[in-house]
Image 1 (tube, one colour):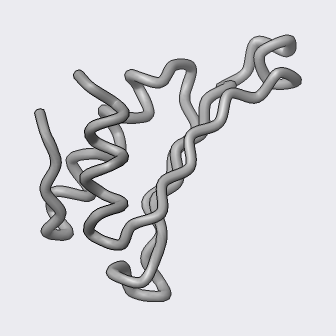
Image 2 (cartoon, one colour):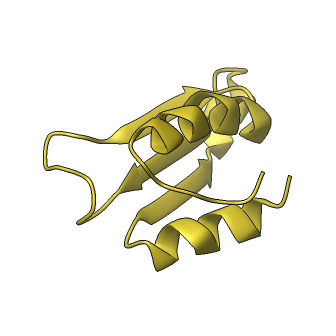
Length: 75
């Protein structure tokens, strides 16, 4: 899975994507990865977000929701 291509495809559709790896959470062995998608194409009350133990888990949680909302990106 090409994460950069996914993020670029979403950005081209007006979605802002933030991916974060938190050092403090990692040190505490908590869900250290955060994925957030927001922006003009999403309604004000819609924010696609998750915290997970890995980047892969974040994508597994958020990408299906973004597809349901009508966004397209590479597999």
